[in-house]
Length: 154
Image 1: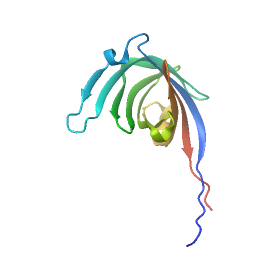
Image 2: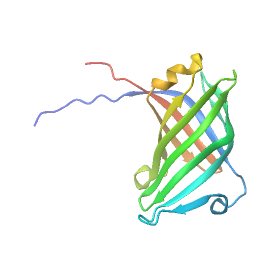
Image 3: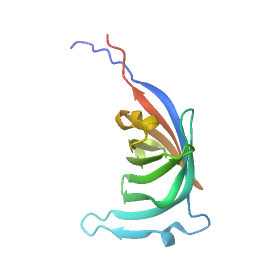
């Protein structure tokens, strides 16, 4: 058996994303619980009521209308599907969607893979930038979003 050298990609911090959900409301009462009758998995829709994006090259607020977490709760954890729109401080719009999960193997971390859509020239680079985000829940959800940079060629 031969040994193969693996190169880890580099991560570059892009921004912190802070999502707010309804405060002081029982989550089970504020979400639509749609149980899948064939698998037993529960589906929840949790509206995002606002938040912010803070980083070296992007500062924005999360628009609350149309922003939500679509969750699928199962025996091994929760699958995440989040959709939101950012309005930057220079009045540009960035649509963000990300899938991910939190479960037994993540120690409570939310692991997601954001994708971006925009026609704003300043932020167009985001469209083709592979990203990973690591988050933690609480009163809201906080993600640190990183660009995955290619490994130098050997």
